[in-house]
Length: 151
Figure (tube, rainbow, N blue to C red):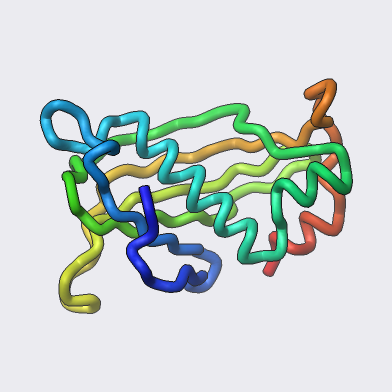
């Protein structure tokens, strides 16, 4: 699950992260194993946060708190295959006092951008909660983090 070589970017409020499908991402049928879309989504979300200046390890070290996945919902539309280039997106759809809901999509990268829309392969939402690192008890997300997410 590596990057394709393009620089990640946000388009409006949608962050995009390139992913290449490797042999290790596929099942015996040669298509991406269904659980690996969660890994693709995790990388996109992590890089989106990093692009906003929110490094997860730094947050844990400085606040003692961290984001954890508390809920997922995924819908599969079409399979990705070995060597496919994907664009995996992340966008905020809801902020709460102690959690965020992020919308993700995995799209098949098109050969001619602009001519054909990218094919939707998989989409889902991930709720991440803000918790104390040692106790895993929910905490209020600091205002500085919420402010960073508004950009």
